[in-house]
Each structure stands twice: as structure tokens, then as C-alpha cells.
Image (cartoon, rainbow, N blue to C red; front, side, top):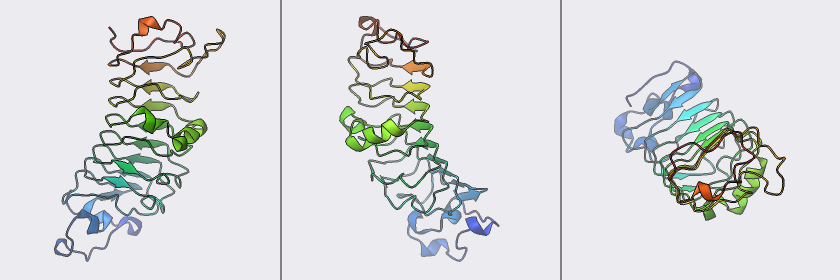
Length: 240
């Protein structure tokens, strides 16, 4: 993106730093290489290449840093921006996220990490409503890490979960708050009566979960007729 000068002092970078003084995007003031506007920071397809999360104005609410070359999320990246409500890092090269990277974001509701290189998931903030990690390299052992399981049990507001196009061998533990879960195009070969429901009772109904997607997995849903008995709708998609 081109240079953008914003009159709001809270979101204006150091205007004296010219292009000749910086070797790459990570050395430029954020609001010179990105667009900072009304609490939103847009750093999309930055040139020269952006390889790390930029320093953000303290009052940032929404960060869109899509289609860059960020490879790692560090604990310090969001330490000073507790106001964040949405982070979108789609289309980067993220392979590692330090466990505390999102722990100081009490208001974060939407986190998108789609189209990256993650093999495991980090500890997630408790107020999260939507989490999208489609098209990564997630494996079941990475999703079932101890730190993530503890976080998962506390995710009482999570309504939308997108884990399609990964390498999951089984369905992860799902919080009761979920409304939508997409697990298409993974390596899930089996489910049980406990995966979505409670196999020891026919009276249990899961009223919130109204969209499940499992197409593109080797599992044969016809072999598990009681696995969805607690749901109000059957899984969507095309199945053999």
C-alpha cells in the first residue's frame, strides 16, 4: 500500500521517516505503511514485505494484516493493545504462535488465522465468538494440546468454529455454545455417539448447534446413525 497520512495523532506514524531510511516494512512507522482509520488498522499486501506484526496504536480495535509474510506471532505483539476486538491474519506464513500471544486481549471476539501454516493451536481468549483456522496444517495432536483443552473448556461464547482443510484425524472437543462448526476436508475417519451428543441419554438436545460440516472426510456417516440424534439438523455437504 502507499503512504497514508492520518490527521488523528493517536494513529499517525513518524512522518519524518522517509523510505530511504527503512530497509523493509518492519522498520517503517505503522501508519505510514498501513492505513489507520477510526480504530482500524489495514496492513494488507504490504510492500516491501511485512514479516512481523507491526506496532499498533494503543486504541486499535480492528487489525487486518492479510496476505503478508508474517511467520510468527510473539507474546509481545499484542501486549499493549488490550482494546482489540478483531484480528484477521489470513494468508500469511504463520507457523508458530507463542502460548501467551492472545492472553492479554480480554475483548477479542473474532480471530482469523486462515491460510497459514499452523500445525497446532494456541491458547485462545475466553471471550472469543468466532475462530477461523481453515486451510492450515492442523493435526489432532496439535488441537488436543493441554493448554488448548483448558482454554476450550472456558470458551463459553464461541459460536463459530472453522477448521476445514486441515489434517485433523478426529473431531475435537466442542463447547456447548457452538452454533456452526466446519470440519470439511480433513482426515476424520470415525465419530462416536459422544462426538456431538451424549450417547448415554436420548433426552439430551443440543439446541445451539445448527450447522455441522464434515464433507471431504473418509468417515461414513451412514455407519453412525445415532451420532447426530441430539442435533436439530443433519450435517450439510455432499457425502458418499
